[in-house]
Length: 401
Image (spheres, rainbow, N blue to C red):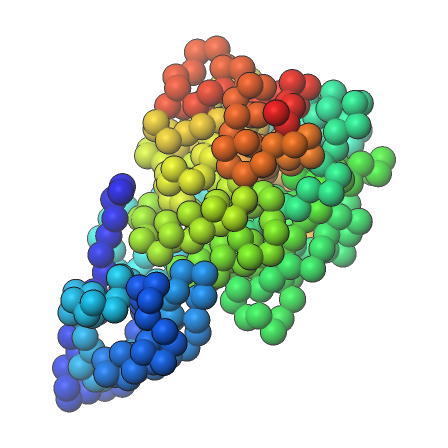
């Protein structure tokens, strides 16, 4: 298990100071062993002085809260109980920057604007003057469409900031999704990242705007990130469990952190076990692959530019499976507009669209999608395996089995 970090609760002073009174409650994820029923779980949480907030049924876990200004049990002490298999502290971070959770002493991955400021100015390099952005052309999507393979009927979860389903290029394919931050609200995009990702996957082939790699696939917005691109570990986990429980065949995760998590790994494995092929951004650090992309249950995607070079910002390592266009990518943004973004976040939806083409032809789950993309991939000249994995898949050669 790679870079597993055990988080424990700090022991709070019994006499609360003014600063402690302002402190926010501490959230934990508590995982119970399979034979522990709900009544016993509640009794255990009461014994430890924790407030039960929400159940994550797929993982037999509960999200709980420890009030500030009181003694709280350590994670290690709780895991000593034979009914509990793991305890982990929830955290909030910006998953679009790949930054570390607050409180960790490490250098965060650079933000997208910081990466872009260090690169040369991009010129418009669309391979066509019409609807197809250069990346869609580069992966040969039109060749698949010509033989009737356009992702029709394939269910794709976009685990991100939400989707603007009113966008002219997306409304035909957008479905009812899930808001993991607030389940009472729709998964609307208040950032733009998720809408941009969605357009590369499945913007409609309608003769205007842009077209996605799989222009007839069904898009399900799964909102796990807020307007700033931030989100809690528990939101990511709930989004993954939702995808597993609701028949998603593909999930695009253009997000990441430089730190792993036991429960995130469990949630990724849960989704995979239920037939979800997870396409995950390798990261924008230029260094090692982030999480969840580094997990074996994920298909990790690096970024290339229009010259078939690996993008300078693209993370690299043995966990990289494929490379896809990720520099100066034109796609949809909220309000009916279009913009150009760069990042492994933009490369991943190209691969997710290709995965949808494979699923339409019979590929199933992570292993089936991986095999289909591998057969259709060609290594890019001059790049190492750690930079590009098995290369860039071409839609013309994708088959389901």
